[in-house]
Image (cartoon, rainbow over the protein chains, first blue to last red):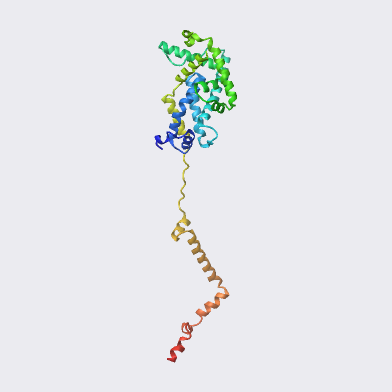
Length: 196
Length: 111
């Protein structure tokens, strides 16, 4: 099917087309979902290599699921975000275990090779945010990232995390307060010293 | 601090990782490998009976012709009594003795 005619087709229908052997459907689904999946994994893991592995694995699971996809049960994007959440949780726990075994508490260096001052400040701010997010409990971190960075609605987050909407509201509120408390001691590192 | 936090979230949205061409290629390779293939349609080679049925104009016609042939053979071998009297009537007399229109001689004689 030509690309133009698929542009308006919902993800669920594209997945059915993919399962029926349409190669264009896979390309379009990848274009739509991969940046979101990678962005979410990247924010949770703060490591490009690991985030790419998780994104590829989540998409692979989607391809494998396509033939047995049950229409109307979940949105494709919600399903993939849920897979990414679970994969990231597994990796973060494994990372925590390795660190506690190695007694290595040195934080990961900031991603990228920013040489300009402005770039370094931006990288530092992102590194501080990543470190603060990493210190949150798993569910709070996922809820905050989905709500405030991925821009999802509370019902969507509830479906991804498989909890109630009220629990999502509570998680995001507590997570945001905890982040503010952690970051308030790092205002200089975040570049807000002039604002005071 | 909450406003600062919102600024930070906005920066994080702009800073989101973008997929490299290599990652996209890996994902598409997975998709191609895992894509369900359409089931192969198996076309059976027509066998002897199918060919014969086609020659007669279908299986039903072949069955009818076959049944008639078998019935003819059975009747020929068994020769039921009822049929015997009919065949005797036809075969025992000479052709000259059989009157197919017995009343016509009388009509001609009157002329």
